[in-house]
Image (cartoon, rainbow, N blue to C red; front, side, top):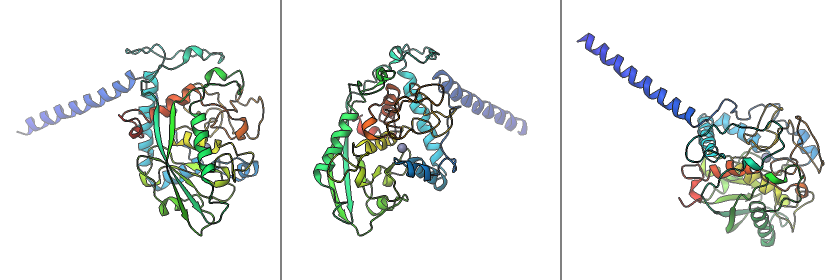
Length: 354
Ligand SMILES: [Zn+2]
């Protein structure tokens, strides 16, 4: 009897071992390499003083750090989303067709990109309904409908761009039409005597996110902060982006040099899983996008052509910190990464109608 039990145990153990191997092999077949994955958790890098002094300052990564500490399951959720996103990107690599090529050829010189344009993902134009809260304590925060509308116009222009003459010619051929439309569903105005909302999602506790919508809280964060976003994988009730009213839209109270609506474009990029273009770290840290050059820092103002990690920085990218007027593109690689979270089975697939 005992012998039989141990025999059975050995058999079950063998089965478990086999299925583990199978999962491992499936990942290998899909060429998903997760060895470089990390989430930004370095408190030193999170210091904000310089960024505030320098002007543009998005605090999405700082907020992510806090959420990772508060929610022990968030890391694994974001890891799983990353695996899916990389599989999606691999499936669109040129030459992958319906079989699996190795998809690993990189040119070394970093000067071409045309041959690397990903295949069409077949999802078509994606329509995202937008719910805008205007949370106001005084008239300057109660922005006009025209200011709200101007922001929606900027989002639609930036996510449907086809002309990249305004960016460094070195990178113009990497510009992407992301093919996402944003449709304003509701502008919900709420008076609240609180004048600053900080970074702890208090505004979201008071006015919860709207399911099925990109929720935008236009609320004064304070402290010189422009905005922050929640990455895919977080809590549904706090999902969306927060932008201070003086950096929202292009008219009314919008304040130069951040009066081009690009703070919201940048935050929606995070909401669709884009990292900062410099990878929030040194040259060896990456944004998980292959056609964006590496850098070890954000750029500010309109710096022209600058190099930090043996390549020219893509300072016109929406995921840098440059002035609104100097920004002008998402890349093809960023497009794939954003649309991956909208694809069937992705964390934001409710918007694709699949
Ligand atoms: Zn950011």
